[in-house]
Image (tube, rainbow, N blue to C red; front, side, top):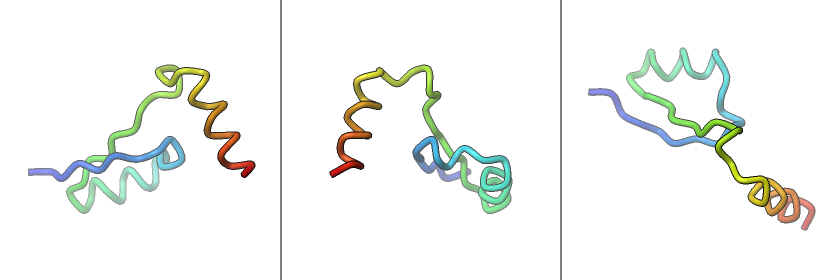
Length: 49
C-alpha cells in the first residue's frame, strides 16, 4: 500500500516523483489551472511580508 503525500506545485518534478515512487510514496499536487487567481495573489502578498 502506497503512502500519499500532499505537496505544493514546487514539488512537481519528475526526479522527485520517481524518487518518491521508489520509496512507496504517491505525491499529490493540485494543477495550476485549478487554483483560483485570488489565492495566488494572496500567496504573493504573504511572501512580500
